[in-house]
Image (tube, rainbow, N blue to C red; front, top):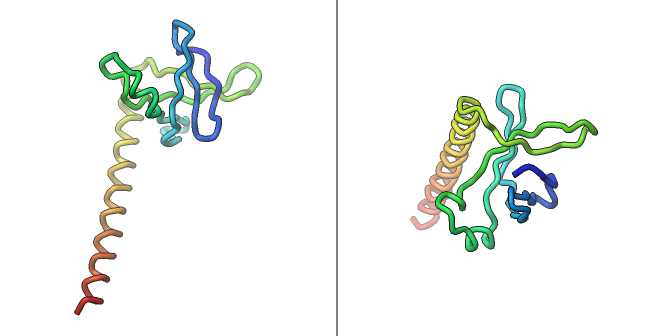
Length: 116
């Protein structure tokens, strides 16, 4: 997917090799080793249309600048770079899930005191 129109209201449209547009939700933008990366997930419509194995999975793109200084999304071709970014994103998601669990646990503890 080469031609990208970068971020329009938390969504991005990517054009595949056959010229077909696909809309993705921008799940997150993270920084790893001084570079920014966009985590994209297919919209519900894209998931319904997906017929290829893995087509409904999240995607990671590096955010670079083109010759005009505009932000563009670039596919990550280096396996090590991709693994580094995926591991960092997983770490952030796990950290966020843990915080959500702790908040829920604190709310439940507060509710128990009200029942007594």
